[in-house]
Length: 239
Figure 1 (spheres, helix red, strand yellow):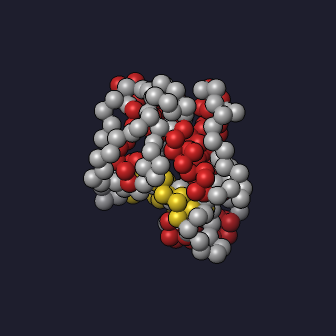
Figure 2: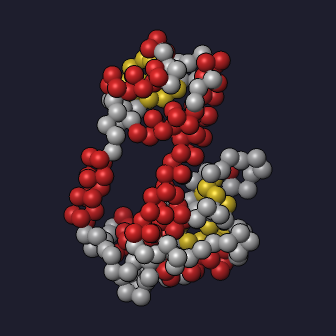
């Protein structure tokens, strides 16, 4: 996924450079660095506190949203994972509350998906929009908890990406162009090195910097996400 004035995640390999200011002179980190053990413990606690929707509870919730039992079929994916496939008549699908379905799709611990390609696409768009809203709310909450809500780098509409990207990198402890790559002056992509450093992290410093950038990106409503293949395409859906 990419962002207009935007960011995309890239798979990374082979990066060797180090962070220059993570935890030292990087206001976005401010020496708040989790160890791997602390991070795993926090993520487990968050998962345990999340909704546990599956089985008959999931079916009841789907019924409440207008999905009939006869439209639900358990199937097993190639990887051996059981999911609930929904074959919904077109007219009935168009009457559904798609945002409510997207919320249930995110909260459910048992996957369900539509069989019809058109319905899959529409559901994916609402799923993406709901995920973006949740990411933004979480990012703003974390910035407030860190006392950074008034100090994090702001992107203003019309601001040159060449000016914004280095400010964000420095705030999160990266060298210029170590985390972000400006494309055509209006798009910003994640650099492979940024992802690779976080993937190979051993002391939490690189992960803290990665999370710092993502937190600001998620909180910045002026940045719009787009799938990589849609970058610059007229009429493309974004969030």
